[in-house]
View 1: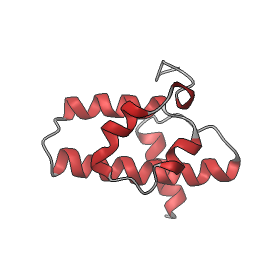
View 2 (view 1 turned 45 degrees about the vertical axis):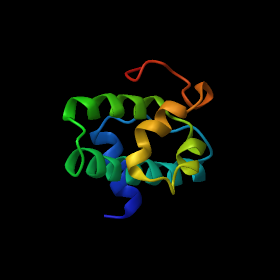
View 3 (view 1 turned 90 degrees about the horizontal axis):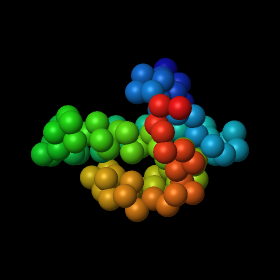
Length: 101
């Protein structure tokens, strides 16, 4: 399975909404989101002290960030910083307040 197919399967499995941007940016950002969120889960829950319940809140915040550019900007971020990055995201990065639209 290619990295792109893996990222798309992950997005579907975890009910991540499609990202907004050009086709090229969306494809790349989908991979960046998959890598960052997966690595953050490992850093925060598997190796850290974040509970599954706390992780669900982080995952819900991830679903609200659908601007491809935001994920591309975070591609080199430390996965353990994901909660702070999500808190710092601007409203323009979150076009909808409802993660289940």
